[in-house]
Image (tube, rainbow, N blue to C red; front, top):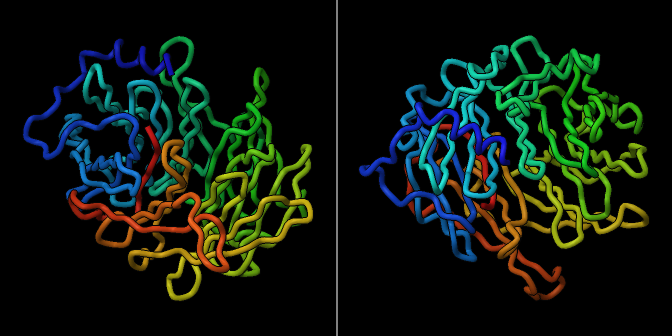
Length: 382
């Protein structure tokens, strides 16, 4: 993201020095990074370098960056790493969207992106979601006017906000928490819920303009109750996959093949996150009794969903945010908030046991760091 690197150099005047009193080292590269909001409403950055994902190091990023506005207790979070930077986005108590950044060359910084872009106010508690496309980052949120907005750094070296709802003529968002995004074949994809529970697609073709499409309507899928989680990704099979808990009480999948949206029923429960790993499509579902079950399928054509119970450390807290990804070094990670520690699960490759798949789940949890104040967290490999 060369453009964001320029942002640092052009705003050196507001850079703050790294602290000497904050516990732990500065973040390191080639590690799993999990950020969350502590009881003091500070952004805490913690990371793991071992295969088990032991979060043994942490730093108070709010103190480190010199941020003066605390994180909101209703804030969502999103993050990504590139080059020499790890970047975390959150909503402050003033309602604005902030970026806390650590650069291995320049140290810690904090930026008020709402102020810098002149963008409208974000809705309280809006989901924040982001896409890293090469070296260019995009952050999406829902405004107080129920419009979907994009924040990005433009070619004129300025933060700008784009009203995607107005640009595409799409319906207003019906829920501030039902929002997800991912990269699909070079296209930026944003999915959200309308007031009638339709899963609405916004997409930007490379070199083209933003467009919109009622994906769940086109697929003939049931509506999604307002406030339910939307989660999605592009898998190696070349298809886009989006999951939500439908009005039927079942987890519904939308998947796009050859430009056509189709639908499938995964299983009962509440979907919490999803990702692609080892050639399979994975959806993680919370079932009665706080059990987390992994559903997976290799092919949407003639394939069937299989399931596997995960070895939870403890019951995830109510409405915990889950984050899943492949870290490219060890294995597949799933992070969540158990209410008093940040916990995680990881896949052991080539694990064999009677009647099971060739991978199995092991548990880990944060060994240090202050307690979280909310269910929000964000995780990435950098």
